[in-house]
Amino acid sequence: MEPINSNKKLIIFDLDGTLAESKAELDQEMAELLMDLLRKFKVAVISGGKYAQFEKQLVRTLKNARNFDEKLLHKFYLFPTCSTVFYRFENGWKQVYAEELSLEERKKIFDGFESAFKEGVYEKPEETFGELIEDRRTQIAFSALGQRAPTELKKKWDPDAKKRKEIIKVLMKFIPEFEIRVGGATTIDVTRKGIDKSYGIKKIKEILGIDIPDMLFIGDGLFEGGNDYPVKAAGVECIAISGPDETKEIIKRLLSQ
Image 1 (cartoon, helix red, strand yellow):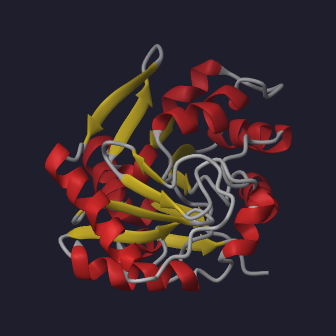
Image 2 (cartoon, rainbow, N blue to C red):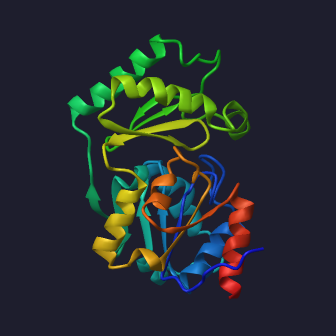
Image 3 (cartoon, helix red, strand yellow):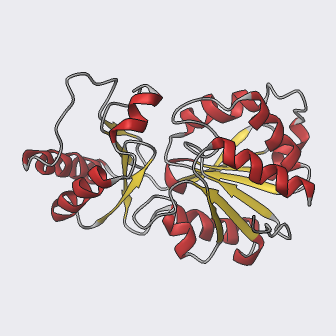
């Protein structure tokens, strides 16, 4: 097993498939490991989910950790919807910025999906769970089985991301001026051009004053075209993992060094 560089100031995580299963809450062990990590490092989470999803999966469950200490939250940074939004803790979670899409941009993205689907690139399942295309205001997210699909079904639908890459290829013909990436287990995330997870890295450097060599990123979407890949392309040292259990082992190694 390769050694992990623990001489970092900031550890950055993806959320779905990294800290927790898709749309699921942190388990007790992960919550406690994150609190322990905050005693040693600054920590950030960059994910495609909107802030309400961060609250449900991460913020509320973190409070249930037996070692929870609110005083450590000033070292914890949240970047929902692929870093189009930034929240930090200052006597409560406060929004620092939001790169909101205009109504015209959002309509164009919805129309782009509709045009792509007419070309037969996506076959809607007989049963779906919630919205297929969600307007997150700073990002439009397509979930092939619906936003509330069971985790087990999500894992089976497109484990190698090939289906979504084919959809993206067609979608690019209709909305090439936007950033389009594979996200989550069944998701395609669309943001304004140039606004992806590397934008969060740029903002971390600009707002928090942390240089790229002092960052370490852990995520499951570091393959080319994945929504974690821009972090790697930005020059951040990265560790690719296959799920939360592997993330726990990485955190334990960071804590033991």
